[in-house]
Length: 377
Figure 1 (cartoon, rainbow, N blue to C red):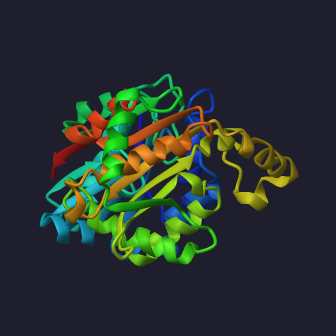
Figure 2: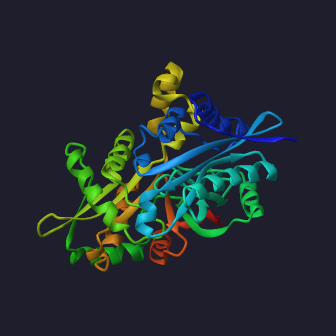
């Protein structure tokens, strides 16, 4: 049984790359695809701003002349500069349950990364930690929320049989019923607020340019020392903001500023779970490509979104011991109450004890795990 690996350089091959998971998951009730136009945008090195400091090579695997898998090999100059290492990444991995096909894909990615000077391969990163990150490890009987991955369980076995080892696990906690926060947390936060140095407010659509700039200023500073974190460029932030503004709920995007001078201090971004709409569109090829029926579905289901994802929460380092993080998360929980029925808090590093404890204290429970793998080249 012959296995053939082809580089996906031409438009027709990129289309095959994008279309493959729609075939692999056609009978899976949990997988939810984004719009195909979004995948094309993310893979386009001339459009998606991540590729201004990164490179990628796409590979397709054929077994007996049938498309059977795909992978992207990725290098990120910014990651390697910040973390002072020679990292390579794999991402966008999809494959039939066949070890030989998986091995051929991983071999192709490793060979290209070695040519780029990488000393190890980590992933999946599709294409980075600011996008879909990790393989689903636990929680296969739940649909993915917005910007979180889903995959068959056998991907873990394919990776481990190849020789990959765990690099890091990521946690997702679920607050399944939005009925406020526990009384003891509420009382504690009331005491904190009496002596607080900060004013907390929702994102202002009227002053969106100002608030987007605040988010930019805080985001990269707040996570600068986190494991695997790579700051986003201004262009990347603008691209992300443009996408989120189309469906964000400004009431649950919180900005914290100091009372003495209104200086930006912290942010928290919670997004409506757009996957509850996307699952009805089945990967339609953009807003125009979905047709009148698809557009009507989008408009019908968008107001019916029940869940949200707590995506980002952090503050500048000089305020980390002031209780501001707790204030921001508490404010988000209060404002989300009555607007959403549930919230996924993700993703958290497995060893971020402070955040994991707080998410548990406000009523969350661990219901999904994701795993990043690594192998030397």
